[in-house]
Length: 215
Image (cartoon, rainbow, N blue to C red; front, top):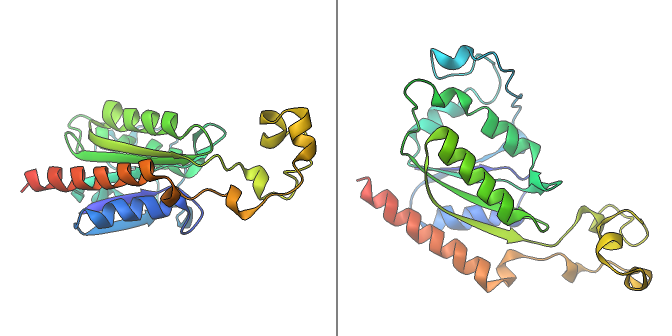
């Protein structure tokens, strides 16, 4: 079974559609967890998890531990806020800490990463994969990223006038002066990028093959 961790708070957004496509195309059963629907508190650094490989906090992370350990693949999907994995994803990763004590229960298990962001998705995918591999001993099968170049300035209502937003920073003064309308085609979809679609399909096939080796 593939356990999909969807870190995006936007239902059916690019990240949701990408991880769903990858999991579905493996032909394997999968379960998608939307972190935005859960209450997961940050790690408090008590390290009381060392004896049991389970966190002592009672929240929505508690029932996920058994699913994580049982899964053939952990497919983690962060979205990028302020150049880093968003808080939903970061907190989830932080709370994986109990699984690495003494005899790490995720040692050698398969994982993959799919990241979506304005311009930093590749860096976030790489950092997330490193955390899973280095701290939790997962074997990273692959990663996919999509730089959507779609800033929050396109939906806040002030994108064409705010002098401190993304458009004002990346456009010349003359270009920003002429930037008076945000149109639907500015909101990019991963499906319109053949290279990203190909990467999703390749990761799905690779996951399928790696899961097959476990049997």
